[in-house]
Length: 261
Image (tube, rainbow, N blue to C red; front, side, top):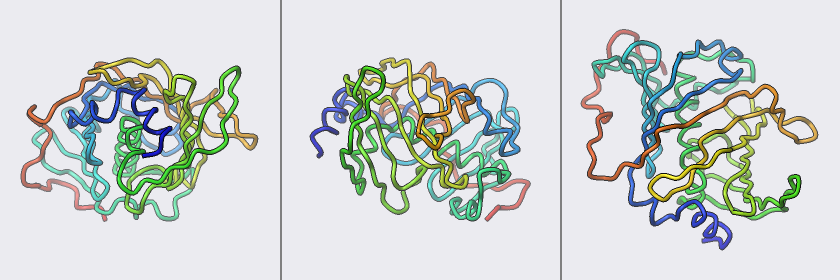
C-alpha cells in the first residue's frame, strides 16, 4: 500500500477497525440547487440511510411517498413501496445517462442512482482508495491559506460506480480529508469540489458530518456561495456483521410502473 495512504487511513481510524463493520446507518439532510436544475422535487425532512462498507450498496428512506425507499447497486437502482414491492427499477443504470448534459432533466430513478452513488462514495472515503483495482499517485501539494494539503490522485477501475474515473483527494496537516475534486460524468462532466467540515468520531472512526459540493470556476476555486449539493450527517453508527439487516429484500416483486431500461 502507498505509504501516504496508509497514514491517511490510520488518521481516519484505520482499515482494520473499519473492516470490523459491514455498514453504517445515519440520518442525512440534503439541500442544494441540483434538484431544481434537474427538475426533481426534493423530499422534505431528512433521510435514513444504510451504506454498506464492503460492497457498493445503499438504502435510503423515505423517498417519493410515505414509507417508500430506494436501493442502489452499480447494476440496479430501484424504488420500493412500504411493502417492499418494486415500483420501478433501472438495470445497468449508467447507460441511462448517456448523452446527458448539466441541465438535462432527470427522472426519479436517475436521481436515485446519483444519490446512492454519491452517498456511498462520501461514506467510503478515504477507505475506498485501498480498494481492489484503484490506483493512486501523490501529486503536487496545494497551499490553502496557511496549510499545505497533500493530494492523492486516484484512478478507479471500469465498472466501479463513482463520479468519474479520475478524482483528487486533498488531506490536511492532520491527514484528514479536506477536499475532494471530481467531475459528475452523469451530469455532462460538471467539474466540482466537495468540501468537508465538522469531523466527529463513531466506533473510533473519524468522519466529516457536513459537506458542500460546489462547481469549480475556470481558475479553480470552488464557487461555494450556491452549493450544488449540501449534506449534513447525524446519528451515525457502525453496524457489525451479526446485526440484522432489515433492508435486505426478499424475492423481487414488481408493482405498478413497468421496468425502466
